[in-house]
Amino acid sequence: MDVMIWHNPACGTSRNALALIRHAGIEPTVVEYLKTPPSRDAIVALVARMGVQLRTVLREKGTPFAELGLGDPAKTDAEILDAIEAHPILLNRPIVATPAGVKLCRPSDLVLDLLPDVALADFVKDDGEPALRDRAIAGDDPALTAALAAAGLPTDDLAEENRRFFAYETLSGSVVGFAGYEIHGTEALLRSLVVLPQARGQGHGGAILARLSRRAFDAGARRAWTLTTTVADWLEKKGFSRIDRTDAPAAILATRQAAGLCPSSAALLARKLKL
Image (cartoon, rainbow, N blue to C red; front, side, top):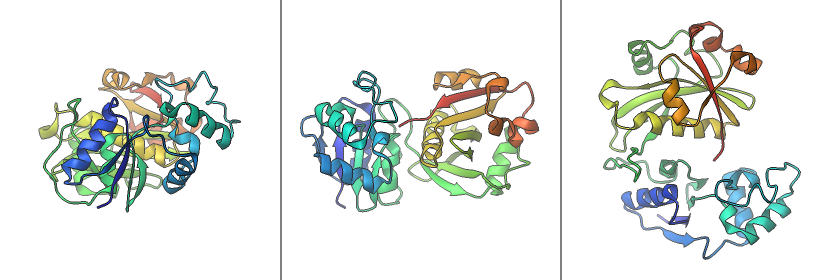
């Protein structure tokens, strides 16, 4: 299988994506893009294959993004390309191209979407988080319902419209948990996140949250919300902030979860979604 990765060896996410490609038995073409930056035309072609806007692949952290004013929505693609040409570090990483498509693979195990869907040995990233695959499931999936009920989480609205749910599996095929989201414009309610008892304490919750957040981003959300009575402190460590309900969008407050399925004592938290 022909695979190319635009790689930064100083980036943990990029190193993990490359390791996962090799874990699948594939030796890719590796382009260290800070040494050999892609041309403007190549960047435009990659972004077109991804089906995203050019600004989506910009990296903010550790780059001159703010200094150059690249958060300004009035910046044109030509100006953004000028900036990337002058500062290749602005191009986020890793970008992976295979016959199955092109993706900015953040989190790194998103690269599995582009590789053959076959069972592999389980894989642990260099930060200790396990690599997972996700599989879309129906809201009335019996395993999802049973897992949520056992964890004391709401199940009354699972089959209603505007919800997407996933089962999460290790690379060898063991189901470790479930989660889902609702999209309301550019706001997403992340919900129904449960790690199965036998899989707890192994980093699966963080891996599920990262994959779920990326799926919501790809569906158009740019801010994630969630409600919890038990894991607010853990969510804050993952970048969420507690929000007073009076400051939440009406669409989030109108969800079944916020309007009554979750107790009024549940903490409401939010986080900006970006790649």
